[in-house]
Length: 199
Image 1 (cartoon, helix red, strand yellow):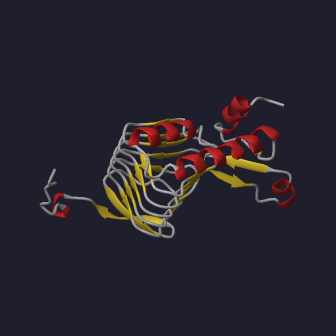
Image 2: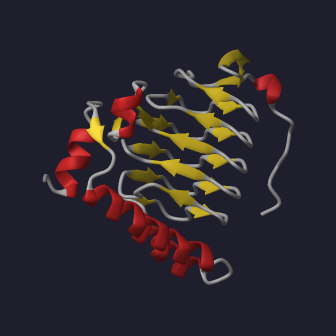
């Protein structure tokens, strides 16, 4: 049987893979234990929480933070940028790479799902899956309850409205919402409120 690294490389190509190999099952088990440790560390020092987060994810930028309860499938295929923030109950299924830029905000109950089971019943029962990467640019805000499906790229500075199901790419600098999500309008200078941070 190919190693876990070889299986991840194959999965990243978008080809069908066996979701039920011993290596993938074991990797999911380790991810649950690692996210348990990270979630249980809520309230400890930021340095300790970042250390535990880096034990879960492929990489995490400075100041990355996820509220409890965070869950992922493997963790190794997830890369988040600096000052990334995910609110409560975030789920990332990372059969393919999930790449998230700097200064990204996720609302509560956001799900990023790179993997999809086969439609054919017999293939599905046999473990057939396909995964496609998800990429989120810098400065993106994803509203609460959003679901992002395999193969989606969201451009820098975009905003996705709460409850949306994102099935295709979202360009930079726009507001998108709906099921399936569609672009509603561009974000312009008229959206500025004049807010100045106190710190």
